[in-house]
Length: 401
Image 1 (spheres, one colour):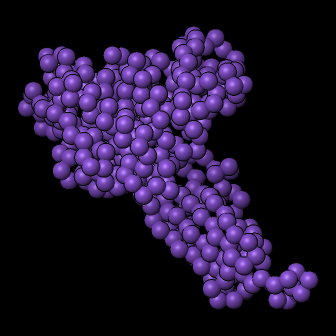
Image 2 (cartoon, rainbow, N blue to C red):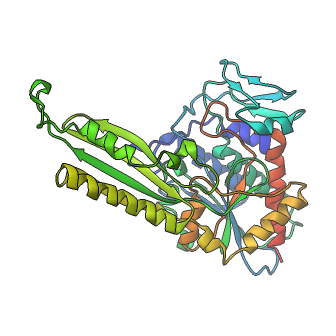
Image 3 (cartoon, helix red, strand yellow):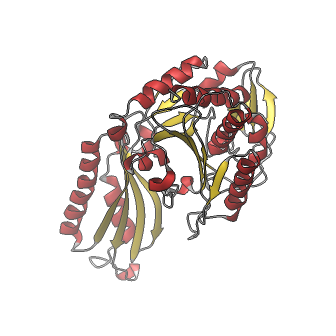
């Protein structure tokens, strides 16, 4: 099967993850696809395992005396932001201008400037009612196709090659149950990025902020000098976070504060924030700034009016990759040898590779070729699926020495 054929098959599995679930994988649909991938590996003659948490791992033994082993990792779940059920992929030939999907949703050159580069290419889009699932079933299809080629062509020289397909990346649990210590690889790549050519090894330092605002409720007719409306108090807190440090006003290496979920009323309100910055010092300053605001407002409105709990989520893997920069240099070479121009960009988010890197498995991120992840405008050029297979095989060749 080609990578495109595999991709079109994999997106028909509903693998939307669910952060409210306590199971691993968080949804049954992920387990179904993971079992399918395990069976597919076994049918290819690969030594594969599927553990009790759904993680599928495999090893292809070396046929050279390579010094190091390399791995490739992709996740099967799709974002809960938009439905991943009953995905109907459609391949179109792009002739320019806006793409109008069956539902009426449009993909425009304004929101996706790279469209101008894709005139004449075949694109896989949705019908406009669901996301597509290129994040990250494209990565799964590309890795699986590279595996099949290695098995069918034993003359291709390679060191030990490890594979992992994981659940629940989209809800931040992709490595929670990953047995890195016993996985076996020296280093590797997640194949979970965007436009063809992207190589990512810098991600946000990330923290979550849980803010509780305690108010005083009384009938509004008797409220003067007594009521403390938790909604008003929250608005005061939020207004003290700079507007220049919000996702909608930042890009590149600029960090931000983001109110992610607000719930409550006059007596009590809770809010979840995320705090992000690539720069470790600025990251720590952002967390300290929140604490100073809370201290100031509690001095103004009374002790424990504001209660803040800050928890670190993950850190910038650049700290680890700088000592393993062969991963980036070799990824550039693999891209160029496939006729793909490498593009080094920072991740304005996180990646399983970040956590894996800090757990002893240096693991930058490679493109899948997809665009507009987590939404109905998601698409992927068909050629990118096959090109990334070539890139993976090029990397395997580089690490076969």
